[in-house]
Image 1 (cartoon, rainbow, N blue to C red):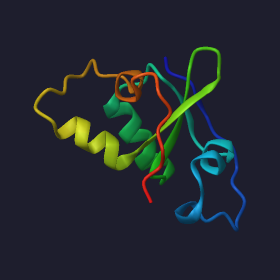
Image 2: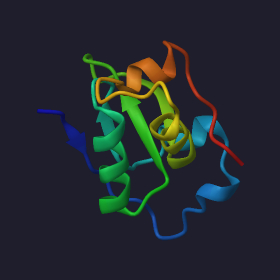
Image 3: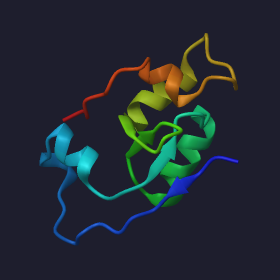
Image 4: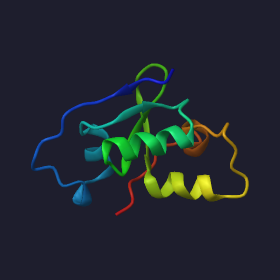
Length: 98
């Protein structure tokens, strides 16, 4: 089972004007890098967010994925149900879309 950590956000948070560091440091849905694309999209829908902070097995934040990223992967011809968030990140931190 994949771990999802939920942390409350401040009411005045405006994710549209934040830097990557601010987003990565902010509270919000954190998911493990072994989560599948389909499950990550379901988590986004359930939590009404457009971004997920991705953590490794040591609970270290390793990147950020957006709904746009995941939708593009899901809709690609090469997508299978075995694609994990770690495959999308490729071991590098992601920058949020403006």
